[in-house]
Amino acid sequence: MTERGLWLGPDNRVAHRDDLATFVERALRLDDAAVIRLRARPNGMVVAWVATGFDVLACRVVAGRLAPADLSAGADALLPNLRAMAPDGHVDPGFAMDSGWRGVLPPDTGFVHLDDVPARAVLGLAQRGASLAKEHSGAHGPPASLLDQEVLDVASADDSVGIPMRCVLALTAMDFLPQAPSRDRFDPEGVSPDEVVRVRVTPTWLRVDARFGSVYRRRGDPAIVLR
Image (cartoon, rainbow, N blue to C red; front, side, top):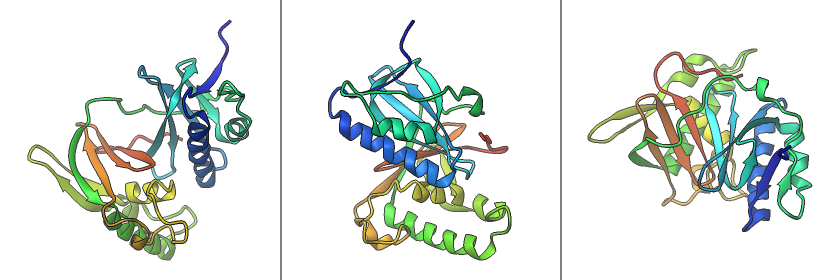
């Protein structure tokens, strides 16, 4: 019987463990019942996915191997097991939670680069969005009209896309931008003026890449609701 689990590394396995643990910890901060989906890539990398609660997916890529090649785990079980990683890099993902993941994942390939956006501009939008969300939120959180508002238009010669506030808030909620620790999460001055986020698309998906992770949103309606 093939052993089930995640093996990080082999190079810099502690760094990969810490990267993944940080990702899982942030997912739990958004949802204490978060489910993490782990998926192996053929190049010796593993992608960790989570539904952020904004109808936006977030992911982080680490080096490692996975058995089976696609599994889901509870974030609350995965986090302590990451901290208890074995010397060979093995991590027990805990009980299988495959039934806890709904919806599809975006493809690994086929994304076309549209343009880069200054990270400071993204943080400025997040700052305004967080303020409006706090002002107008009800019992069920921020209104959909605020989250669906397209706050950035990004275009190339062949395509264009509007980036909704959902993606901006998901990116900052997962702390994917390299901000100074002394700064507020939404402070544009907390990130280098040279830092950018990269916008890529397929006909059906929008992808925004930042230094420490990526967020994905289904293009068009209806959105893919995962949990």
